Image (cartoon, rainbow, N blue to C red):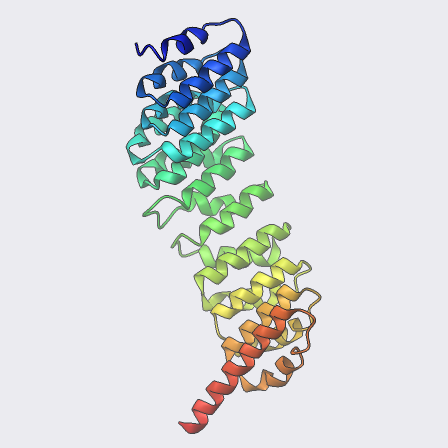
Length: 320
């Protein structure tokens, strides 16, 4: 044993919590590889403050040998210890740890399962899919939500019928994440499901996320739903509906986009102006020019850009 480490290792056995905290901190500052093992032992200390400091020390030491010892901390009864361990493992885990994480996922512990699902997002390995799917049917809303988020981080997953089924989940939080994940899938029903969610889901955040996903997918079949959503009661839904219409050029959207130039919210006005600029139809020039004195600078800037783009296209057609 390194003589410099010996007194601090001995102090870890003290009955005084303060002494044990000092010992962990001192071992951390020494930064010696031999200090790793005694700090790992401190993870089992009876006092949560010592456990948390030991986790922090291992995090700062950034030694991958700490990965397996840190995993049990993910199920600690102390929230601060769990949070610190998750933060450390987010930085330390690598694809080499996949099997260890999947093994821990089998533990019948809510916090362990939740945190492992989060860690799997860093690894991106499709081999995790069969282990993630059962959580779509968990009794715990938090686990269903975590699992559907994790799915969109896994590589090479193109089709996933169980993910589509989560659009009928009773928990709004689960549906909010499901609609975002759907834009990463290639199932034939995806756009139709998103259109339906945008039109009728009772949760405005689900509708907003559905519009965001439709903007990513750029499907012409989303145009009617996006046009209808420009009259949604919530401004964030209208904003992302306008963004969806930016991606699918169709003159049928002109009336609702022109109306949106007078929306109460500047974000909606700005995105409507951008969409009109991409449509390139000269009939909207007068409407755009009326927004050049808008109180919001972004609206004025993007309206002018839209006008310039339409006029440039018009000139090019004339000269052509």
